[in-house]
Length: 281
Image (cartoon, rainbow, N blue to C red; front, top):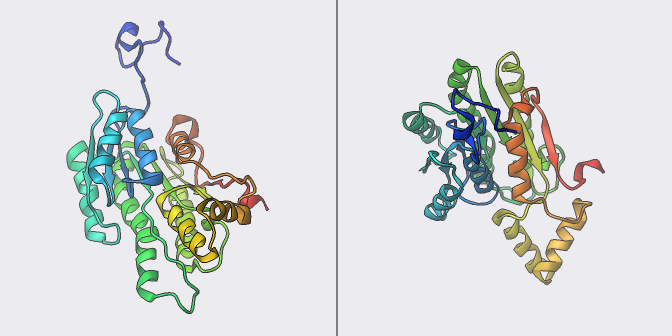
């Protein structure tokens, strides 16, 4: 913690009184899929830590940008790019945009994801292709594009938002499970290839999180079981998550903040489960 006797960057201690001085101040974070849910919570947290934030995603863009900007520290900027994370050319445009706005990407959060539930033999081929493109291939493209800048400055943080389904499987989620397992593998390879640098790459693997994506699954289950939403949530949690509670987006954002910190400089290639005990069984 800063004290009255502490000076940073040559400034006098009194200049820093009451300020939230963070190692992310003046750094730039790109957060894919950040206009709602987990990505939005991470974007808010990074902005509050002093980072410039590049938002990406669909939906209520203006509201999300205003929300993140409201969390930003003095001097930090929040901008938006509409890249479709299923398209390599638009991903390249996103990274180029971040570079043009801020000089480069210091922190990359690969969070964009979509879902479809069906048996393997009934899984639509176009949905398989879309899920693999957004949930896995997009992270390959963003990573390969930001690594030269990160290596050049010998500092960077890449956090891949995987899933408990990057560690274990569930039925009727072939594409999602395959993509998230692949994302954990990509995380490990990236960590090994950057192990002698100041760049780290890790993954967080949440279990059930109360996001719009999960709420749609709850609604579908309630309709299928002819039950209330509360009963469907309890059933969903009871099957897999021993804690009986959802992981919160704030908890995930705090974990990402830790992985971006200096304290985590030797945390490399980890797939960190936040799953209420799901994978402990």
